[in-house]
Length: 450
Image (cartoon, rainbow, N blue to C red):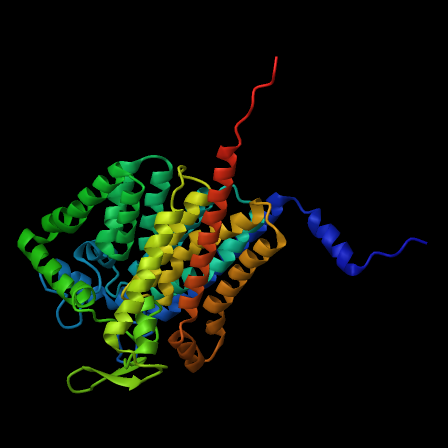
């Protein structure tokens, strides 16, 4: 008598018989349900008063007075400073002006919906850059990228908006629309400094039209548009105050935010290797930050800590010079190059919160596509698979811990470790693709005799 099929074999057979279109439809319905649930949760969060009785439980609502003050002629970079340049406030300002919406709750929900759409565009553009990708590889990338995306949606911040601009610029580069790509990248840099890391990359790639477009975009978005909207003198005053409060302390004075939430290399280096606090409390009288906790394992001093950071930056530059040599603007090699720059934005920013990791959509897509489409040996396949699993555990896992455990995990840099693992993996992808390209170019066809 023939052996009876086990329940597992029957299940596998039935799953294999389901058409791919049904899997795709079911997955999209599942994603829509997740986003709808997040929207409901966001509504309850936004509509509940804070401890002091104001509707400021999301970043969007906290900025309402500052953004409106920006248009009313107030220097919003003094006292409780607005964190972004004036152009970012001007982008958000219309959302606070919806009729019949004095508390900006409607604007907050519209901002949520717009960002959900932007996140969808980010994922689609990441798949196009990494193409070809089978459906299961796309699903893996979506599942891994969903955590920071949902976190930023819940927080009401601008990180998805910045990622949308950066990925839009990359999509325009893919389509060889370099001037437009540069202008869009200029808007991303004008809203948040870290995308400026793409500018030296474009110089290295000799994409001169995109470089010029980015420089012109910076003039347009930092000076022309805010100057016309706010007044030339007021805009210059705002830019000077913003630079003095948000940029100069890090670039010129060498100050670094060492609190546990900061997952950049400067943050974790100063937190663990110098006598800097991992948590602060604020004095009730003058509002000054007072050190509350320390977790440093050594104290090498600020000067030596800066040398550690510079050594990491030097290693990053060497990786770019050696590996970012793709001649195409689509496919795994180019996607891995762009992933490396996106990871550099996270690793070398003065402050990197976990919600900034929305840009990991492209590294996850590139690695999943590499795993799915290349004839890898068991060792390399296990390495890439293990990297994806471990990066997911390090970024998603701490959320399952109690609040104190989450803070402790961030203190020791769980997200930083994930960024470094992904950086090493995309470098491996670029080295593999470069080796294949060199091997292919070395094979010269020989004409047959006679």
